[in-house]
Image 1 (cartoon, rainbow, N blue to C red):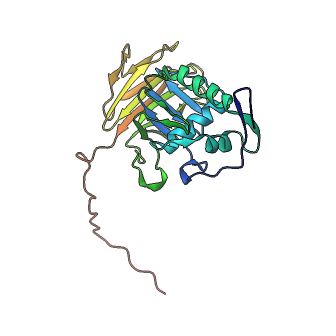
Image 2 (spheres, rainbow, N blue to C red):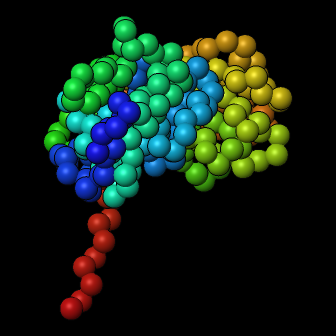
Length: 253
């Protein structure tokens, strides 16, 4: 139904490709990281707020990239079975662009496809495996060891802190809610303090700016001491053969 320049649509249910079927999205683009399961969008060391519908829309567009997604499909995904006007979709796109510092006339991330829909046009890297074989960093090569726990670091930004929404959650008094950030880029890992109250240290040296981490170094996140580990194919040794002086005697049947 159309009136007063507005188009009213009723979503008929989700009808697009498998990329828009609710598959979790975890990706890094430009200085941003998005995770659909924790429902977090981060950038520049902090959390960026989006309304729930705008967050869902951004996830749908990233999952479908580089393909454009029709308005009917977006309505079916964001407002299933509900009558809405096209202007609602435009409002969400504008909200996303404001959060990302994007502009409609020179888009870096969200491109308008006139008389059709929208597309994510930025360069993004999947941080978990995606259907269809598009490569991502699926196997973590960096991790932190804390007591008897192994805390994995994924490709991209990993915020360390006492907030349960952090990538690395340390529920310890003296650790700030968003204490530090470790950024993994291939075989290179850097750490920086995020203005924490009790500081971040590598060994006994305070982290005053972003600095690289090396395998085996001790990292102090406030009162918590963790060891940084980094897997390297170049340094990996072959499996050692064990020589037994007295091989075990087989048990009688």
